[in-house]
Image 1 (spheres, one colour):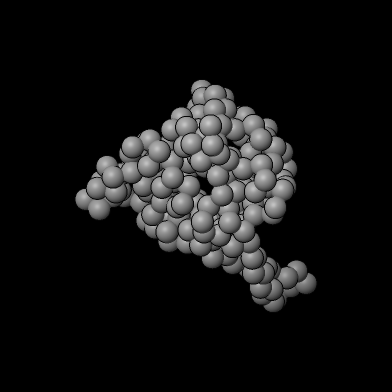
Image 2: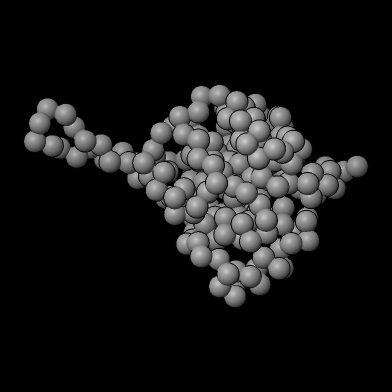
Amino acid sequence: MSKTSSAKARAKKIKLLLFDVDGVLTDGQIFIFPVPSGDTRQIVVEAKGFSAHDGAGISLARLGGLKTGLITRRNSETVALRARDLKLEYVYQGSTDKLAAFQEILGKEKLTASEAAFVGDDVIDLPAMENCGFSVAVANARREVKDRAHYITPHAGGDGALRDVIEYILKAQGKWKQAVEKYIGGESKLGN
């Protein structure tokens, strides 16, 4: 079986899509702005850019029957806000052991690893990627992550890579056209 047909066969089984944030949902840049305060402590404001294509993709995933969630090592109120906006089912921040978080979510969903996908870009994502049914590396991922992925997105993280994954899975499952029709028809109440 070729790598492409193997990836499609794996994508057909997916019910849960989990992903990293920095480098996947964003381009990996983190902007930190110090804001002087009246006391000796300094307040820090963090900013990240998110792709509207990925947001629309999350809506399409939901319409196609996929559950979604993020697992990230960092803690960020910016990420928490975006996750609430997208109505993600799972939000795991501060996860130094992404495999443990991945397995905990599988248990909550009563799914096998073969029914879950993980999208990553760096070595911290490898344990989850190596233990899921469909591992995906974004176009800007580190080489060793790409080498272990079943599929590599055409777009980079923060530039629609998550949308690429969702489209690939839903097309493999024959659900893409119906999800798009529902989305256009206004059945999605999610922002992008």
